[in-house]
Length: 165
Image (cartoon, helix red, strand yellow):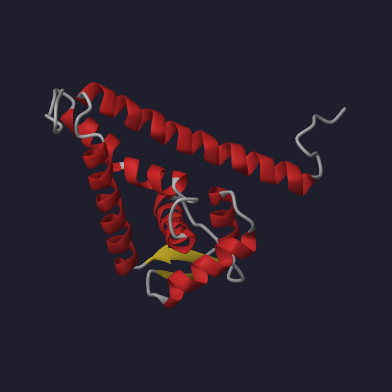
């Protein structure tokens, strides 16, 4: 068993995979840690990973939470200097969210700490098992997030998860 990762032919891909573990763990540990800290971490990750402009509603949708939850967390991030609001260039009425330098540094710091914890917890695992678990953990987080968003949409739309005739 390997006690630490050893770079292989695709070492760069392995590193990127392991970097994704922290955000996945943060989402899974919501019930085991300080909820406000977990939500803040999720907000920072969602804003950073958004494919384009993102609003409070977009963050709520991506996190699978109701808008007031996202709004309160974002307000705390703005107050803490981690996120700033900016007007949309296409619709001035719309407030967009952008990470500040401090927000990006905090996001990297949290992800690095989560990666260290993952590596310590799995230090006696075989490298292939560790990487496969990382893949599954990230896939689970992504699929779980989509599942939660789908459930929220169904609740909002009144379908209750049942197909309409």
